[in-house]
Image: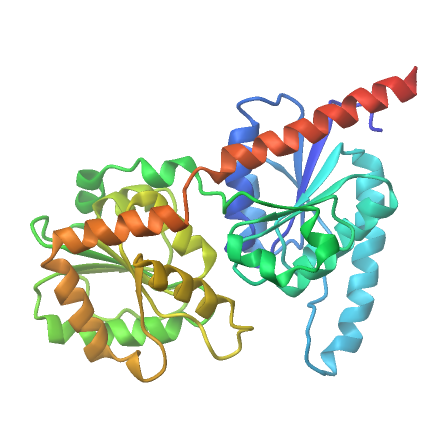
Length: 374
């Protein structure tokens, strides 16, 4: 055990969806924990910058992508995974954390295996309905498997179910506490129009952006758009009184959620749970090609409960998107009903509950190490 302050370690990365829920938990941990909190990631800018911006120590390890398919790149990545294990083991030995909490992504596998072999308890969290490959691997060594959805239990064998607990997907507290007036003022769009917040910006964002570009002229300026494009993607229209685009939004996001009447985007766990926490109805266009189907499952669960409208296949057209936006924009009762339904499926209080679970295990381990020292 390190002689510094007691430490809790997090791991995960590759996309913001593997980082921001972890930051939401850390936000709650800091209210009750004055020890060290560190993050072990791949060093990609999206995770490194977000973690450091939150004032958290960041350690990078080599990472190789985990693929189910046969690919020549797998051979190279085997060596990267092995190097990641060696680096993670060295980092964990130096840090001596009481617990390692994984938010998934391929970078999390070597640290979880290393922690297990060092006798450090491992907790792993899955945001989507169906567990990803990293979670399936990490769950072999995890003392606790934390799930976001009751439906996820069906994907676990009996041995893993005994270690599983359903607690939801963590959401940063600021998401549900923005200021609508400030959000519309920042956008500079007409304040009296219904506002559609489009959350592009990650894998497959181009399809959503193209649908928005096609829907804009069909709506004839009857609604305003706040459009997150993603890096390098062209805007759907020139900025003006009914349309504002930006590659990414950071500190302004809570205000944009507060100002929005409708949220449009993919069906990753992040947008689903954040929209629920913000009390917003959703129109979801789940990623299908190049995906294991997790977004389709997320969207189906929300749609079946009445919390979202899903557009897939032949339904994913600009005309259908424009029609659904038009109907929701003119029906506040339906928007409110959908927001309540989404909140019932995806309650937004998971971060605090998971933080408590981590602290209970950390306290038990701290007491154990104190006894061992005596």
